[in-house]
Image 1 (cartoon, rainbow, N blue to C red):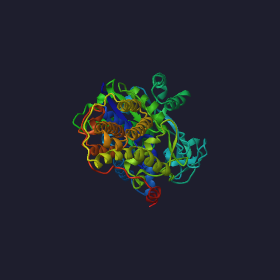
Image 2: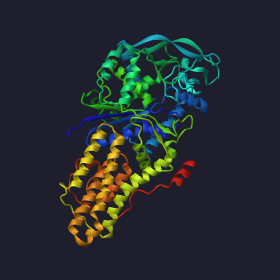
Image 3: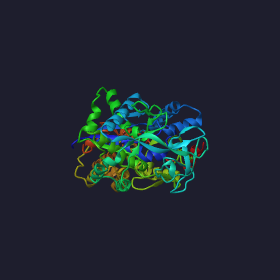
Image 4: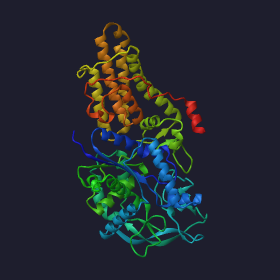
Length: 547
């Protein structure tokens, strides 16, 4: 197998509130599964995300709590890091956009694009609050969405329908600080000339045949009406400073500078491991593949604006794939921190283990359409699929070996139909994960678990133990090998449980080496110990969530 460099970038969450499970389903779980899988097959992986700490989401929260934006950013940076750790989502680096190094990178991009003619000066109409006496950021204006009529749409986006908005689009707009109707006035700003890059973008997008159909359709619809220049500065004081004299009261807008956080993260990780040029291998090597895991509301930024910025700067690799997910809903509504819909990750982890939550969310990932989160379905899926079909299989095999105090010896099963079926399933699973089909990969795993149960039942070891010890050894070894393959396949999804299961089976090499060694006929030193699964009780789970 030819190994490649794989850069995995995850959308930077705003540091203005706790992470809910919709965020995890939208970007982070699929990325973590994909990163673990690529490491297992031997690819060189750089896995980057970070904390989006500038812009109005943070200042709005700070205003509400009577704190500084820095205090809000510090709090949620640490909270997000802890949440990801608790869910076993392990980035190589989780950067911060408030790092001085990030400001330097963002200012470098700004100046390079300005010099190249892809940024120019102009004027725009912005909301001015006469009571407060200054221009207000888009998010400080709320009103009724002109598309879905949600009454609390923000000036930049409607949380209900996901449409990108301008404050002037809102019906009955109000300043959230004063309650006054804003006056719309002209103000000087800098603009990214997307219009100058439209033809190059269209040509490039036409080559993205491996992208999800929903991502391609969203991107093509966005660009169909023609691209216009887009403002990249705002009248705010919390953000990356514009590196030019005369613009001290303005800042580079968060949607422009936050994208550069991917490069900041890669650069800083490279410095920390003592190889400061490593990041260049992922951004300039034409054989390297760059993936961007995001929710669908971020598609325009990653499929159009970020590629345009990279084109304008020159030399950088463009995104290889943008496997954006649709929305995970809760009782038909979008998860929302601000509206209190659904659960935070931390709330759920008080009621179920990280691997149970990872397994269920992976099984319903909204890869090509919205899906709905349900506590009842979580309990049922974990109990019936993960525990009954996989955990119980391992328990039956291991407890049988323990009951009869058996030492299962290696035998050649390389031509057995069941072993070949398992290897074929693994290959199909690998094909799906290589194409970032996370949910389909898990479905193949579940089919193999069902097949393995069927084989164990057909082999009837409780009979052969009395009449044919050679046959018994052969069949038990075959069951152990299929369980080994199942456990290796499960590892990207449920890493902690898979490692415990690996130790229980007594396999003589690390699970991290397993993908290249599944054909080996090694010994199993099956150990006494408990299977790392306990069935969930619905009422108990609900009680923990309500406490």
